[in-house]
Length: 120
Image 1 (cartoon, rainbow, N blue to C red):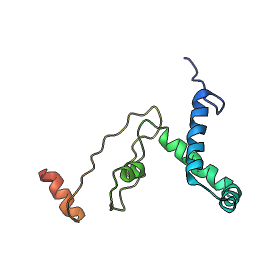
Image 2: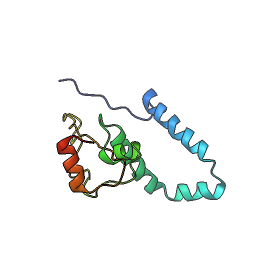
Image 3: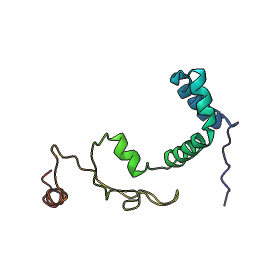
Image 4: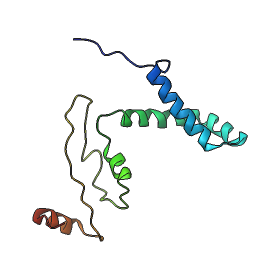
């Protein structure tokens, strides 16, 4: 079995990622004080980047990412990654879920009833 090679920051693909980061940094138009604060909080920034890289490099985005991307303004607090994992490991088959939009606020019971009747 062929071992997959790792892509590091000096690799052209890694450089492409660094260029994306540089673009975001440049667009932020930080002043000297803001830049110092960002550099002071480098550990926090690394944690945020690590989490983003882990999430965005999956074949399927996480549930919170999907909810954010769909611009859903309210979700049930039980709809969490723990309760609805999209994909546990890179080699797992992604699970399929359906997200339903309601035109008005609705109770969980009504949502389930509509789903059972397919009268969305």
